[in-house]
Image (tube, rainbow, N blue to C red):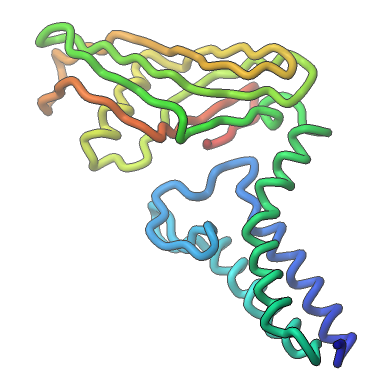
Length: 218
C-alpha cells in the first residue's frame, strides 16, 4: 500500500499546515468572499485572500505527495483527506473554545441565526432591533462590547445595519456556559441622512466583539 515513506511524511506535514491555515479563528475570514474552495475563501472584500491562497498551495501539494506515497487506494485516501480537511476546522475550534479558551475567545456567535429588523417610527426616526445568538464555552462570566460590521458598505441592506453603530457599542454579559439570545435595540435619527431609509430586515448579521484590547470580527 505504501510506496514512499518520505513522501508520506512530507504530505502529513503539509496537510497539518493546511489544516491550521484553514481555521477561521479568532476572526471569521469569510467576510465579502466571492470565491472559495472547501469553504475557504480565496477572495475577500478588499481583493485576494492571501491566507486562503497559501492554504490552497499547501493543501494541493500535500495531496500530490500523498498520492505519490501510495501504491493502492490513492483515490479513496485522497478523497478521505479532502473530507477531513473540510470537516476538521470547526471541530478544532470547538475543542479549543470548550477547553482552554478564555474571555471573548470562548464566545461563539451564530451569525446565520441572528437577525435585525428596522421599523420606521416617523420621518425622522428608525427603530432598530437585533437578536443575536451567543454561547459562552468558558465556566467564567464574560463581558464584552458589540459593534456592527459594515460588510458591504454599498448595499442598502447592510447600510441599514451600519446605522446600528450610532447607538453602540452595546454591552453584553454572558454567564459561564450560558447560551443566550441577546436583544439589542436603538432609535436612529434620520433627520441628517442623505439617502431615503425605510423599514426592512437583515439576516446573517456580522459583528465585532471586543473586551479591553482584544477584538474579534464575527
